Image (cartoon, rainbow, N blue to C red):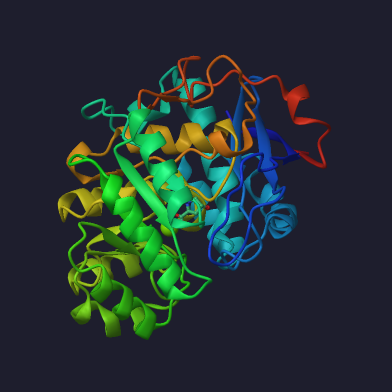
Length: 370
Ligand code: 0XW
Ligand code: MG
């Protein structure tokens, strides 16, 4: 009943639509996809893909290098027992959550296939079927941002994330006001600088946009800076990059720092930890997203599954990078945006994907038991 083989793939996911953040413009990230095979020949898939080297401490090459340590550690373990698997991974390396997440996600997919159960049901089941998602408007002119925001709302998107930072703040303020002008009453707006502003800039932007209904996502780089600006903001504060683990998230909730979270499954180490964070956020009525930095259908299916278990009132959405790279590993079932909502794969148990490994190219590494 154990894990017999792990095949590692590096899959290019080039941005075909401009995607820029305060720190970087996404080019061609190499996604790490693993195929985890058990002794009955079932295969579970895991994936992590960081959008750029600048947006977080981890990078895609480092994820695959760390798998050289972790893959041998998990061979032979039972993929259904994710507690034992994660304990073994934490004993093998400190940190490196992104590499751990690849294997954790593969275990959830494989466990679902063994138990003939969708991962969304293993995680607790669909709550209200909202399929909530959000869409990113990249950094650009006020005219571009407003036109994008208008287009997305016409397509049914009700949550917008406007990227900002990395330029003079009067340009950010102009784009924020332009987007706010076209936001419909039911549309939620978050402004995400991916740690891009100083405390002074964040306060100045909040003052300049005081009358706009929006949230400020990760306006500054550190928790200490967020604590400095929090009392001076006119807007709810959403924490993303600083929300690195369950203990930190609990502290941010209990001290009233975070009004919401932007959560990446890879940064937290996989679905196992993300499930615990979800339970905490739902219990504390703190909205959260079910995201990741970039990725193909496996990342998207993991986020859609976790996102489907969120109360829609407390869901900031499951984000899809597919519209920006337009690559599917499973053309038939890969999650999609439909009428402003993200679809759950319908390909069967586990993550619901049917993947022919040949679409992933040749493995760049392989680990076999024995
Ligand atoms: C929108 N995301 C989830 C994807 C991009 O990598 C950035 C990220 C965010 O919100 O920071
Ligand atoms: Mg963010």
